[in-house]
Image (cartoon, rainbow, N blue to C red):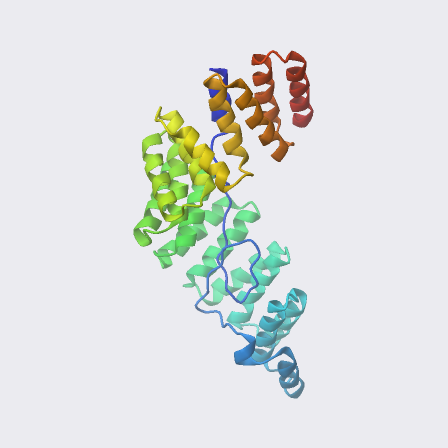
Length: 332
């Protein structure tokens, strides 16, 4: 019973974090971005170089379009501050320059000026209240700033304006899941699947949300589909293994093995496989797996507590004591 409770605490490889949809003209970091249909885009071969626009601006210092295009090129060259300076100039000349305001909002986010990004999205929406992506992007910023209620309102509006907006459905579902509205999150994932039946994220997240409701067999079906669409998805194998174990279906160890084969740094797979080995009496195998998990995540207190239990079963009472003390240290 003790090992089963520990297994539950390690439950899923999910990572509930929002993704942002923004213009492809804004250099991506670690976020999903989507083209805004209202955002002008540029590439160097088509529109020339920064130096070309330097000459245009020298001849006409009030050419807002030249500032906008030069900002695009500067951003592409990772000169975000230079791009922001050009957008500021364009907007000072034309305060209603919608594309520049939209782009400036995105750059301010990249420069960690979330309040500034919010103000710009407010203005973008004021100028074009039917821009679904602007609402979605503002929702993302609001959530980052802790305004979850405002973020939810914006995602609702984005989906109302564009019922095919997959990113807004995904982010709204994650917010619902974080609020423990797992059924609402499942409904949003189902909407995505109706729009795109090949969405790996939708099947993966829906399976994860079903797991939190104890719908293990249904979750297995979604993880089956995830793996069918993305056979290299280590986390899907790891999650399916846990669902199989909870549903008393054979194959959990095989799935953990595959998860680790695909991603040797999958801590959850090591720790959960360790517990299955412990339950089956393979104490040495359990100890090896949990030690590997600790090697990968030496700052995770729960792992030391699990290893202390396994060491006690192996008769290593001193080692168990040391692990418990380490867990206490990390929890302070």
